[in-house]
Length: 316
Length: 278
Image (cartoon, rainbow over the protein chains, first blue to last red):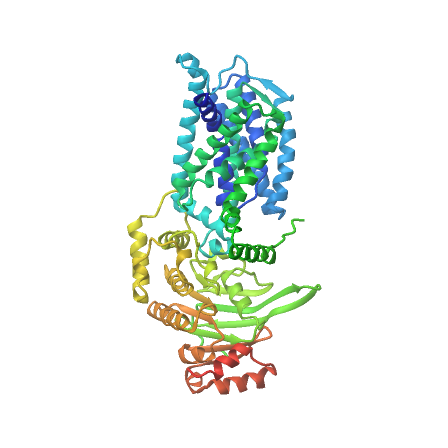
């Protein structure tokens, strides 16, 4: 049974790897709180579904889904750059608008891909099981993306993206046109989220406009779990940990459902995973230290410092 | 009073004005109709009280702030409206806070790679060859005598403030820009590190004959090491001395002259720096 759960976790988890890499690029590397990713996931899913129904090659439909996602990300970037909207606010607006865009793209609330050629159809022709085909396709795409991101973040251009995410003034002082880097970062991140949406839709054989709901938290859960596996600051360990993180998250979901969790509680479970991982990462040692008097004192000092140094940023 | 005017000065500011909307919707003039000409290879020190407009002046030259009025020419090129990232081939600025001068979670080598790409104005989708970056970094870091050339793989956030400022000055020298702007770049350092970084800075810019504008509160250092000294007050240059006039000047004279010219007073730190034995 465990092995079955592992297979399910790998099968579904790999489809969400692009999304997690996108979230990491936007939030981890660029330090931009981009919720557009959720909308791009839906836009990518809709685009990939409609193109598959119209008989386009899976590679073409997934590629165009990525283009649609990148365009969605660019809308957020333009709102930020031209109208000086805070990225969080701009991305909430665009994600909301993207929901309608999905309905427009599909001309309805859902689309069935029954009988179409999807990115996973080749498995049946090759005599493989559906699950094996899914794992191979997802694995190849995940591996390609990890390698691509690894290469990209080590180029001069990639370094300038990292610098922009660290400190805009420093980056500009080094000659980086930071507003352009933010736009590129958002476009690439959203293209990845859209690819994830396209893969999920092709895999499950239908697209429903609601699949994007809460998907950002799924990605966050995978990312936070993954980041808790490594303390390294280097790119390769982080990327591998992200892939592992999303698979482990999916394993937790599959196990919960297997042992009879009410599927209605799934979103609650996901949010809970994010909170628990963050809490353990930042508070774990502190909780243990509360067993001693000096530890409690240290905790009080740390807590006061947190409140003293807390900052607010108005985004209107 | 301007320095002996060169045919092609490295910096030419004319009629530069910068106003800010202070809290309470009150318009404050930070720099007021400032004109300045700096000949190539000159080491200029700028002193003045807090709020005198020193940093605003540097920011207008570097492009972090654009002048409301007036013109900024660097080596004859009009940069008045260029954003900072497009000026770095001409102007390098080193800030007070070490964190602002390099990307702290990248290694020294990666920071140099970025700075080199920025100087070329191209960030290609490939990595500048490590050998090239290391050679350039070593050439600049070795003369500092701080052993930094052997630590190129170190993540820059793990270095001390003094080391980071020294590296920042070295990075700012890449590609020999026309102007080097030092904005109180040793103010956050302890006196020993400050002296070391100051010495390293002077060696680098003198060797390369880079025109330098240094904002400082250390009046003695300003008098001893600069070719030309500017004192600012309320957005204007109130003292401008160079050559023999500068060598004859003592901190005491300067203080009196400042008080007489502006009717204001120097910042406490300038007074402290003046009175402390060195």
